[in-house]
Length: 282
Image (cartoon, rainbow, N blue to C red; front, side, top):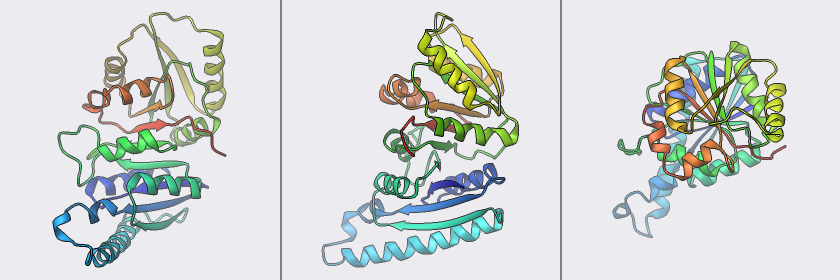
């Protein structure tokens, strides 16, 4: 059974991510955890409360959160009444990252799906700050759905890699099982000034090939060091409809996340983006 966590702030983009998730996994037996963490909302305007009325504000926020989660369940039932899917709601007086971490660990979540921008994200921020925090700090694959993205079946997936890291079987299995129902083609793209691979890189390439055996895979080499530009160009020229990258030490994505190029990277990224975490979990 697939376990999916969807954080929500009840915005249109959050609902759009829910809609995408129910469509993408419509053929699988899934448990969805719809979570709203509202601690930031409590302290958003300190002029509204004092120590004496803090508890009443918390109570009010909790009630509002639970009511909106019930509304969200009704919305899901109206767009996707799927007998394969079951839903749990979680209303939490907690920070988004902390609550996400807790649920991932306690429920052994397979994937987090969320919109790239919510109610509170500044329009000047090209990649939603909440989504970016989850990708950086929560040890679980994250599928980020762009603002206003209309669901289309993933048919052509781009997976840039430098083959320097040993991938986790669980995460490649997730990608394989996401792609195979739609007979998606996966282009594994290696960017380097030299096409020659080391023995270590060949081993990692073979591991990818074995784990994605249900899928059609193309192994492609482009001689370039300009990662962001090459990815953009490849997406546009080849009608790619999902991007997959791994966030771990010495990966392309780590360099982009921690050298502040994620804003540049996401500026024109208008397709779903799956960040694998290469973590060790059962």
